[in-house]
Length: 356
Image 1 (cartoon, rainbow, N blue to C red):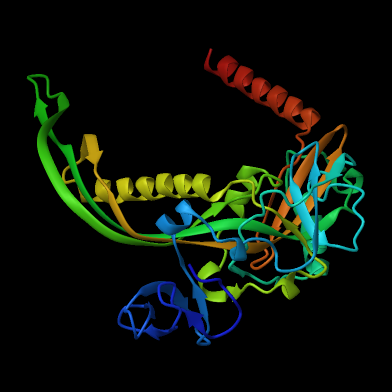
Image 2: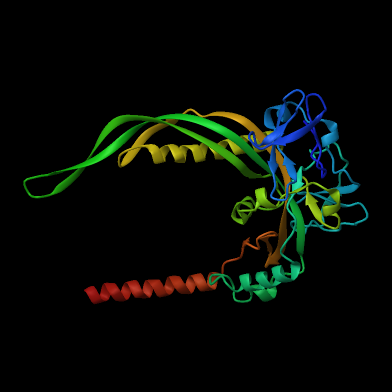
């Protein structure tokens, strides 16, 4: 499995000769032994190579591990995030939760090297202004949230993700339900369901199914940050792009990521199968997906992360470093909630009294 580099030549994984891009196959094809290596062709003509998933799950070569640059790695004892940054930097607190309980780690079990990354597009000044507005946009949050929350802990970082591609052939079977109605002697209509066997077949391609590999940012926030323009704007990995930035080392490994992606693909297939079922409702849907041409990429995506404290509790706000989309956690004002409940009760009592 060839190393993903920032150069335009790609070696054949079978014989070592230079593979060439073949539009008809949408892949790199060796002109000597005909070995096919999946890849993505970007608009500017550069390639971001896909890696065969089955081969990778067996073994990742040592020359595709590590960061290709001197980096320092620490692990937070509080949130368990693993941060990677420039060797000369001295870290005193965790960039993800603000805890001072961080310890240095040796590179035991060197991680798979990223194949590509998405550069930051949204500047820090804009992010800080957006977060200030975000503080004031939540009615149920305390009025003084923007004043009391600690806003000096904004960090730009690259988070690890896996992307997976696959082709799926999926036969399905189900019972399709068709509604019909009867009317009794009183003119009352009753709905019934007539069930009948149904079957079909879905054929589809999955492209860049995104699976977060971070544990430093809360899962719900990672899902809400999407979408990222992963296919269109990815650049081949270059350690120079990471200079001055914090990078989180993945803690959802390739095996876990592949399992997660399979579940996501199964769910999407199930929805496509449901769309094919005739009638008004269905039951007992059974799908039998068969996956082929499975490839993956390990990529780094840009996120601005703010960890703030309100009262005694820590919260996170995350901003998509490419699109500017913002999502976050915030405390609830129990004063506002209590007043709302009292007002609702007064209204209900007034309505009940009026009816009597």
